[in-house]
Length: 431
Image (tube, rainbow, N blue to C red; front, side, top):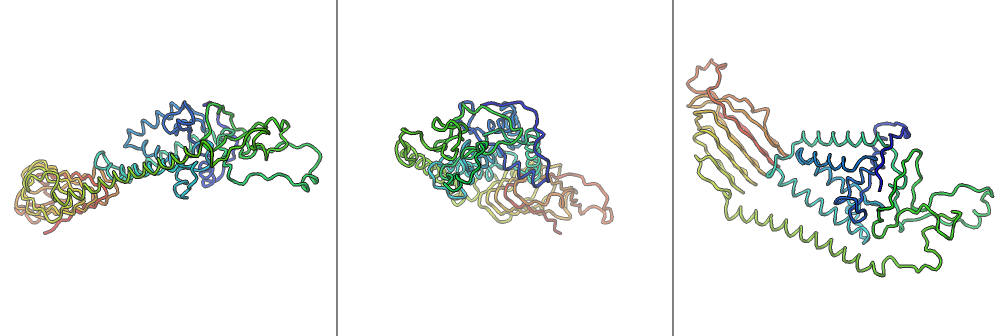
């Protein structure tokens, strides 16, 4: 497998934005899994990108590692690439195999990969906000834009795919038909250039050449044949090049030594899916059971303490005093935190963390204690709705202030740090 450094081919004419995106998609890379290439790592995504766009695979791996530390963007991009990039010589992507319900045993590995990737992605999407900084809508948009720009730059560098890289070879598809006697008689006597062999895409002008001798075909898929067999040295019958040589024993694809292996792969895929389903069911059952047995699971100290947490909890929690730092953590809960009767004696900070819940926070318009200003800091929002901008910098006046003195600065500040995952956080100010 070669990674060239040819200069950008000026070849393909520039079209509209839609046509460019369509061509980028049609000429996207293929993967070279470890099972097909000993030089590949893991699932061969980086190697496929390197071969398609003729860059160093080390550089591609480095970019993915750096992106992984930027909020986990590299992991999400790698997972999406696993779903939409097909294996070398395989005509369908793992996502296509899963969506179409493909039962061909040759696609068993792709189906297992699609199921595993989607399950792992769903787990990270739901619980990632708890274990990390979470995912914001702005982060998703920026990450998608940067990924698209990087992809476009690679495409502009090498718009034409290397010869033979993107060939799709499905021997169960309809191949070129043999010429009939009538067409043979009507054909011109002058020799013509041989047509590409079955399963081989036409080579575009300016396409770089690569060495794929060290890459094996996926089990059940033959690589595109570019050289005529021994029985057709002049290349006059490309439609029959995939037929076995005379004297070579024929092997039924659905029988023989490969039969039990394909069955084992199907059983392996079912076992993997069953194990993942059981694990998710156990985790979900444990959460539900803990919520039923321990409605305030998480360690409730007291209403006046510095830490409050609960699972499957609801109702109104009255907070009489805000003094220093306080932490609130809820999972699948819908509580209301009532600060209308609380006095603030110093600058304080409230940290609210909620997952799959709806939390309300009530503040008064006036207080018997010193005046204070509420600052809302939305640190991490993942698929959540929070009134950040509308309630930020809200003033709670002291009843001892003059009624007309509206421009007086607050004596203290209460900062609310919000970390929400698939939740709703509401702020209200009441009389």
